[in-house]
Image 1: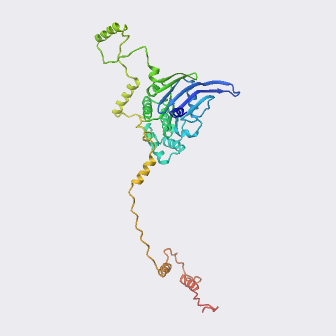
Image 2: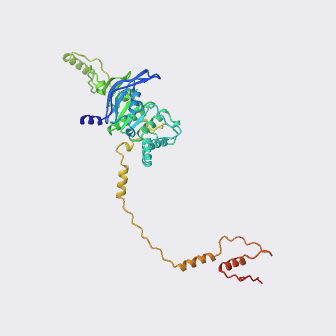
Image 3: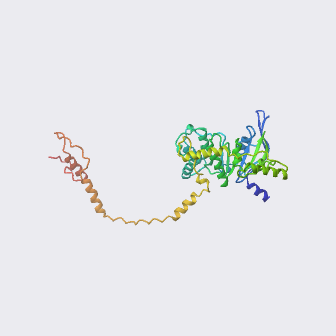
Length: 397
């Protein structure tokens, strides 16, 4: 029992007899998209899922994500049921088409998805900047996504799939719409993430991309797995032997062929100079043009891998260590306030009241019916002090 548990924890995905049948309104089987497939994706490996359109690749991915329920069979993802919400934050997904909010810019887009994963504002800010630099969109971080080309939107979609630093990354046609520079960059990024321990499921129609980056692969057709294994196991040609040396002279080739006929009974079928890949030639031309500082519009070539993808998140620990090692501030001396006598306070208040106001209104013109303002003030003061001279009801002279 313990052995089974250990094997389960070593697998990112385990599928046994996985089947998906799409039915019509009357529950009649309309199409068998996935037909009883068995496969495993191990932790920390890059797994390729190949097949033509309609072979069941996207349906398999949707069942892994929990978007579709299997009709039959057993499926576990990261040791849990695909419907378990606890594993959602550990998965990054790039769909076949990038569905992005066209009126947001790249910074706002990544910040929005970071909020969905509950990332703190400081972490979101740093990750957005690092990811945009990594995919070559830092120069257009304030442009609306609706103005982007398909390749630029694809780059942003890849950054969105990495914003939560996932343990399991699912990419459906990640290089679709990218130029050769972007394609090479994505493949280099996948290799780097694989070296850093990420588990990646790559689905693609471009066989060269899968061949260059995947540790193991499975080929689907008609909902069934037709072949699976490592690249060497699937691609090795057992009928031929290739011997590669430096350029030989024609007479040397004749001697080698004579020796092969005498010892092995075979001859040399053809001789030719080795060819480099077209992708390598293209990248060399681009590298030379960049060295000559030639200008080019559009997305940049991308920068280094985002720092947060290189290691575990340690922001909280670093902050605690910085606070612990920071010098303690010297407490300021508190000087007690000088005691003031109550009589002194009263005198100050009366002095302030006796001062003329800075906002004295314009003195009105005097006439026969208007009393001077000084008499009014005096009467008010006399009334408040109780020194009214007319007390007792006497009339004033």
